[in-house]
Length: 272
Image (cartoon, rainbow, N blue to C red; front, side):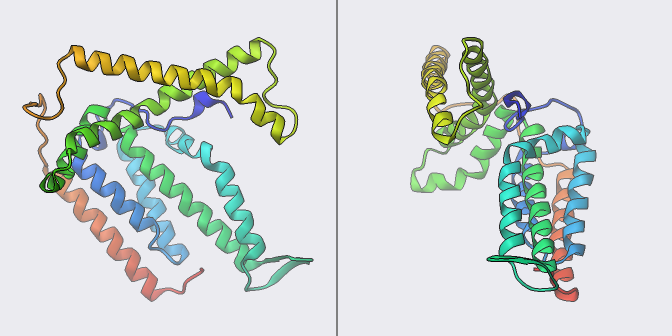
């Protein structure tokens, strides 16, 4: 897997309905969908959640391949989770028994169910950064966290730090890819050998990556100071956030989705 194929934290400009939604609503609905993905206990509910995700991807006008590309970095985690469920979940018809390994129909069903749930979770979450610019996301976080000002928490700086960290994920991935390519051009072997050899091979990559990260942080801080950045005090915004009819309809639609998932849980048998 090439590092430049990782799309976490990237923003893709567009004029779709999802791009034009209020970012505060998108943040709340993203967390609501994460909750909704964990609600289904049967295939019908999971199919509804997956169908809603596909419908949202169509609304975003982003290529389906691009959206599901965000799943690539966690494929090993999905594979490991699936294997653990296959080997250790018992129940149903026994298909294979050898020593401590017992493969049953319930284990395979559970593994497939959990894998699809994780795919929906990651793909649905990635739509937030794909369709929301870092600046807009910062404003939305600040507005949603504004009640914490009561306890004297600097909400603006907290939102700024979270957004900058998210924004620099693609930059660090690109920098890592460049360092790895430079090391390979000098004859470094990063892919062969045992586990300890591969860990030692990462040292020539991590050191320049840390140096580059600190340099970028220093340059960013200098640029913000040169622009007289003093936090959120007295700060104005060029674009004001306003909820529209489409935002209200989207909230109602997601609430109906969650209600439907709970209804399916109570009316249909569970597969977990």
